[in-house]
Amino acid sequence: MQHFTIATRESRLALWQANHVKALLEQQGHQVTLLGMTTQGDQILDRSLSKVGGKGLFVKELETALEDGKADLAVHSLKDVPMELPPGFELACVMEREDPRDAWVSPKYATLQDLPQGATVGTSSLRRMALVRALRPDLKIEPLRGNLDTRLRKLDDGLYDGIVLAAAGLKRLGLGERIRTIFETTEMLPAAGQGALGIEIRAGRKDVTDALAHLMDTKTWLTVSAERAVSRVMGGSCSMPLAAHAVFTGDVLEIRAAWGDPEGQQSLVHAQDKASVSDTGSAVRLGEAVARQLQAAVQAASAKG
Image 1 (cartoon, rainbow, N blue to C red):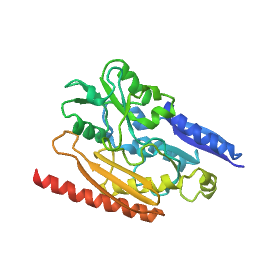
Image 2 (image 1 turned 90 degrees about the vertical axis):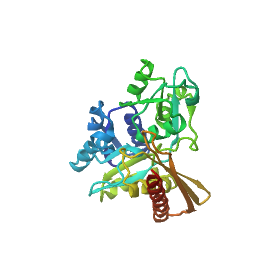
Image 3 (image 1 turned 90 degrees about the horizontal axis):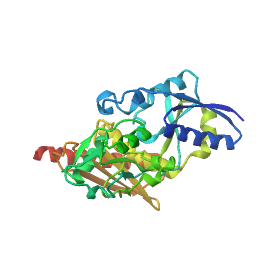
Image 4 (image 1 turned 180 degrees about the vertical axis):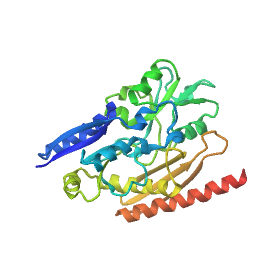
C-alpha cells in the first residue's frame, strides 16, 4: 500500500475525473489525496486558447506540482494534453474511453439542422467551428469559454441558440439529459483523444506506473496513440482545426482525419487509412501515414485557392 497525491484542476468535471481515479486506486488498498489547482487555462476566459498559448495552459501548473514532488500523478482529459510532453514527464496510463463524440445542446432546437438561418452557435474549438460551418455555413459562431457548468449557464442565459460540447463530460457529470443530439462521427469527427482520460507522471516513477497498470485500457491506448500521431505530425494544437478519430474492428484499426477552415473559406479536407495494429509502434505509424495524406490534401486544396 502506498500514498499518492493526484494533481487536478478544480472544475467539477476535472474533480469527477480525479475522484474516479482516486476511487480505483483506493480499491487496490492505496491511500489517495487530491491537490486541487487553478491553471492559466481556467483563469483566461476572455480569449480563445489558440490565441493565448494552447492546451498546455491546462496542464502546466499540474506538471509543476509533479516536478516539485507535491503530487505523484495528474489526471487530464486526454484531448487537453499537448502532443509533446516536456522532458521528464510521461503519459503513464490511458483509461477506457467514454463516448468520444460531440453533443448538441440547446433549449429550443433538437438538432443543428433545426436552427433558423443566422442562428448563434457557441464553441471556441477551431475544429468544431470548421465542422459546424461545413454543416451549416449560414450560422453565426461565437466564442464559448469556461468550464462545463459555465458554458451551460451561458446557454441558459440566452447568449446562444445552441452549443457543442463533448458528450463524455456531460455523461460523466450526470448531465446526459441536456444532450439533444449526439453527432455521429460521419458528420462531426472528434478531436484526438476525446473522451479518454490520461494520467501523467514524472518519468521513472515505477511505483506509480505499477499502481496504474490495472487502469490501462490497451485498446484505447492504441487508438489514441494513432490519433495523437496525426496531430503530432500536423503540429497539432488547439490553434489548428484538426480532427482525428480511430476505431478498431477486430485487430484492424481504421483512422479518419479532417482539416477544416474555421472561417469556411475552404472545404473540409479528409484522409483515412487502416491497418492491423497490435502495438504502439504500429498505431503511431498508421497515424503518421494518415497525417502525411492529410498534409498532401491540404497542400493540394491550398494550391487550388
